Picture 1 (cartoon, each protein chain N blue to C red):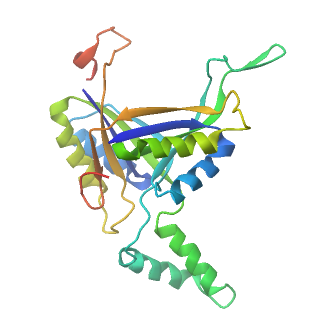
Picture 2 (cartoon, each protein chain N blue to C red):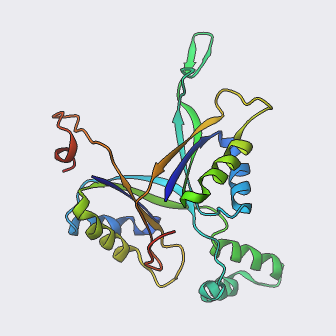
Length: 108
Length: 139
């Protein structure tokens, strides 16, 4: 089991989540975060904005679904043909166990 | 060393904190998140709650069908709701005890929407005050 952490543009999150839901990956957790990337934020004149608002999407998926989830996020979160700076990042982490509290069942 | 990530109802924050203390865990990080779970496919589980909400919602003015679809979207997990996310660092052998405590405190009779618990491995932890690393940094 894997935890997909995708940091995307806030204005793209609804599109990404709708696309994931229609592909059968409905469950998700959403966190509002701020951050900067390797461009060191945005510099306008003497002002530097390095706490840029992003949405963090957390999703636990089975190993076999990893590639399709990542592909959907890559496709929908990209802006423009080539993509642009600030479109976000995806991290994948191992999850050892998952429990659903209401049923008490183990696994996703 | 493990990280336990528990996503629970906002209302259960206090109960979860109490349960963690009685399980011997004092430290945690909590944040406000939005969450949704699996889509509810067996509609019997939300039937009772739905009846109750519909009884409140339908009157002569509102459109019954619209109200019903609205109520169902509230109950079948198709939209996001505020949830509290707890992140707890723990020794490997304490993990089952903590999970039981959280699950016990958060289970309701509603059948859906009580949250989820994930257990993830942690490579290292360092306490900033003393600089100690590894298992010594957890408590």
